Image (cartoon, rainbow, N blue to C red; front, side, top):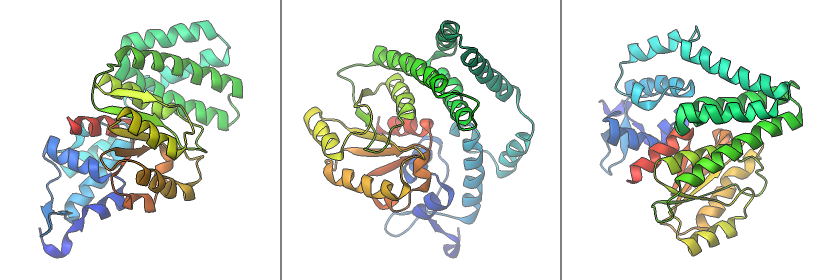
Length: 300
């Protein structure tokens, strides 16, 4: 790689939206990307790698998993992007599944809807249920509510039923002595926690010991709980409803209150607008649920 074309890892994170920690995890697990190193040991990427990572990010945003993408040639990645112009059978099936759920809710068939969700959890397993049903269903419900196609109580029915199933699944997997210990919550002003609950279920499935404090916990109380219960990770979620100007300051406040040994994770749609928070030491940005699972695996 030629020196004048080398790009620092922080610039890659800022321009493409892939967290630095995720890039490091991919390098350890998959052997790609393969950056050069500065004299001080900082990872440096050339323009070709940057272009490839842009393609990878496009496909990650469309639901592909890193293991399927990393190591593929740019030509293959571009072909995958082109193929998405027409819905794949799996995507069509996923849309049909979401439509089935919404139809049951709109017809106010609560008991059949509950039974249908339980059956889907049993058939798909917890990981498949979270990634292939709960995640797209929550987005579809949010879109339908915003367009006026779902009422408030219908949106609440979906949310409550998903929460009941996911909490039960997470509780059944919790091992009180397991490490790492993960504390999940939101900061004051953030009233949306469905994404955190989905993350909790996945982390429990992969061996973490998780505790949820619910929503809107003050930073001082989060720090006090970490000290009292020896948590290893604090995971927060920010929706687009959380004021973007407060995200970086809130994270900085919490980071200062936590022990330096405690990892701080932030995810959710609201972090897409995060600017100054990237300079917070010890902060890892999670662009999606699978990034959280990868970050957990990297600690093992």
